[in-house]
Image (cartoon, rainbow, N blue to C red; front, side, top):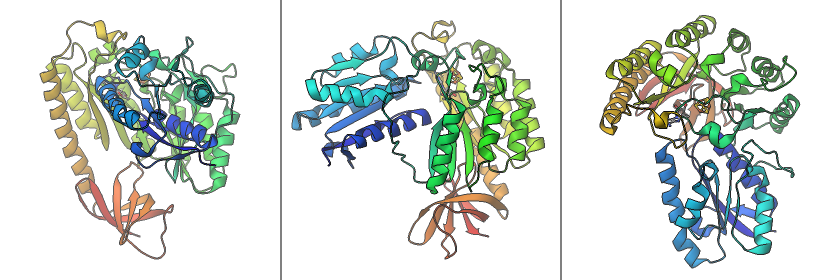
Length: 443
Ligand code: 5AD
Ligand code: SF4
């Protein structure tokens, strides 16, 4: 029986996207159906992110939009969750600014949302559920995750983070790193493969490489987990994110190299090309160590592609430091670089550092680096023309075209044919590119 409709706003990373899939599962179990737009909903959930100030502002703007909807429908339930209210004093600020909010809970107790909602429906009284203990809390009920993507599925392997990069709020809002039992992960992946429609399994953690560090049994490591999953039967691809260069081991490189089911696209955040800045960021690796990993990856896996995250304008970043990042970007030639301006986060060590970089310099640096990356991506595309891209996943069928994605996430538009269908991996001859898209023909 349908008792109402839900609409979920999701901000931030894959972890949040996946947690919204859990929220959808909890709501479905209670008889709610998905609404096409917030205006049609009986419950709106804002799953927020606080990694940068801009993410918080975006969420706050949209929460504000619920006010007129609540006026029209006084029974509308407004819930705010995720990383934002998990920060100190933010829950009270949110409630003050948006008195119409009914439920607030954190990123670590998302699995308890059903119980919070049941309680609200009984009492119709505002409650917030921000726990003292910031570590991830596995819930009491079985959740049938409602996955957004028809072909690709996220699977948690670790929660939280122990790294305390000095710019980052994540360790403060998501607590300490907890690895999920290996048996649970393998079972979930097996179930997904058995369903038959999932072609890409993405293993999620803030730093997947430290999977198992908190286990007594030291034989359970990320490379071993990855290989065990790769050995499962079925035609699927495995991805993982994110990796921290400080513990990207030779063993992991060998596991990727010898297991064809593991994606050849590796996301390896560098953050800065300057050793001085990497040290201030508490990243625990040097530019040289990063470049050595890249070299080994390329030597052992010739078809590897690399993507990265970069922060410009970290405190004390001089023009020379920035130029070191530029030279690293030019040297590595990433297929994708996600470039951010440093954003001050309350309570982090970098917030208190002297020599914060003025906003106009940050803007100039991000602009320069984006232009350089654009050229690198264009050169990459140029080089693909006339060559065959292996294992392009067909994701969508249009009137005259298939829309596919390469291993490293580039969109390929293909002429339709009778032999191919959505969910197939195909080899594609690249003919052209424009506007960030590739064009090709199925081989
Ligand atoms: N300011 C800017 N970017 C940040 N990131 C994390 N914290 C901040 C911050 N305070 C970026 C990092 C990370 C990505 C997920 O977000 O590059 O890898
Ligand atoms: Fe943040 Fe660093 Fe942890 Fe990534 S590894 S979540 S950047 S603290």
